[in-house]
Each structure stands twice: as structure tokens, then as C-alpha cells.
Length: 171
Image 1 (tube, rainbow, N blue to C red):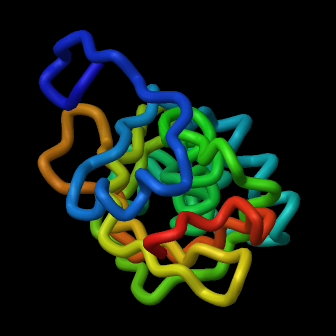
Image 2 (cartoon, rainbow, N blue to C red):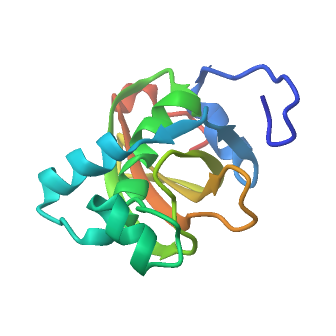
Image 3 (cartoon, helix red, strand yellow):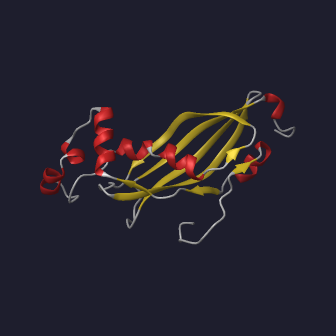
């Protein structure tokens, strides 16, 4: 389904030589992910961030404007990996993909416990580096169901590694 709820056909694999032609296009919208209180609590345990706005539903309902607990911003950010695997096409010649980092991340709206989120990925740059690497940049936004503002926006950089013999001649 696309952002308007229309059924779409998801491209699951592309050739290395096709990547540059996709710059400027939204390549994927992930399925919805429910951010449960259990997920928030497990993230709090993993990161040792037990601030009450995340882990104490009664206190968060009484003392915050959110009506209950909210997800950690970094939890929402970390879900980008699952969203990526869910909706972005794989490069056929890829031997490995590496998370290279972020140029910009902004947390714009809370994700309430029980809320659903999904990622929108637009390819903004694809540039060959060395013999066997393609640097890829995505503009990403994480939509919160029934909210007007995204939970976050980010500029995400990844590296696609491939066997140098597979590099397109025109690259």
C-alpha cells in the first residue's frame, strides 16, 4: 500500500546499474510497526534509559501532555533498520550493506505507547566510491498513524558493497 492506502507492487530487487536512475524517487514505504509498551520497556532496559515518560504509564499520564508514555526518540530511529528491510529493494550485486550514519536527525513528534509508525524512504544520492562501493543517501521520515507531523526526519547514509567486477561500465 502507498501513503494513500492504494495497493502497490513492491520492487524487491534492482540491478546495481539501475540505482542512479532512481535518485529523486521515493523507493519505499514500510509496513506499519506497533510501538508497544513492552517494546519501549525493553529498549529502556537495553539503553539504561528509564525516564518516567517512557516507562511509567501512570506518572506519564498525570505529569506529561502526552496522556501516557512515549517511545524514546532513539527507539523510533532504531526502527529504521526494520523499516528499510521491509520496503527497500535489494541491489542484486550487493555483497554487504553498511550503515554509514546520519547527516541530520530531527525528532519532531512523540510516538505514544501503542502507536503505529512507518518509514518513507526517498533516494537522494547514489555515488560510486572506489572500485566496489556505492554510497547511498536517503531522506527518511517516520510517519505516526493519525498524526500530522512525522515522529522524525533524517538524512541516512549507507554503503552498498559489491564485487568490483560487477561495477557498471558507465559508473
